[in-house]
Length: 132
Image (cartoon, rainbow, N blue to C red; front, side, top):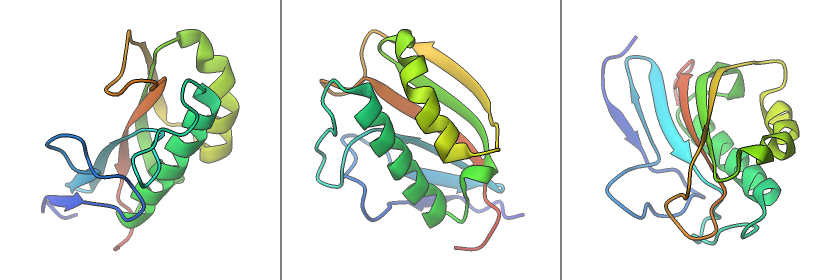
């Protein structure tokens, strides 16, 4: 297990809008948060939680792969929704992404997210199980 801190900027994700990076690993753990934006910073499916969620999980997959992790290595997720009733709409996408793996999870209803039109964001802690 390494205790080295590594920051990741992942190809195919848009440039951060503030002072952060796509993911950070430390002590065999990976920490990341992703949204439903494409590589150019365009929000996919403005005001459409299903489209945003699909893009968000696509982005999460890129981050996990870049850091030597996978959906099966995800330990904890926190999903932020501007309408908690949308949980039912995004659950099938989440189940598709994680398959049989069931990470610990929290759902948080929020008034708004960082950029206009955003309806969902996910915060993830995963194990790093292989070298990049």
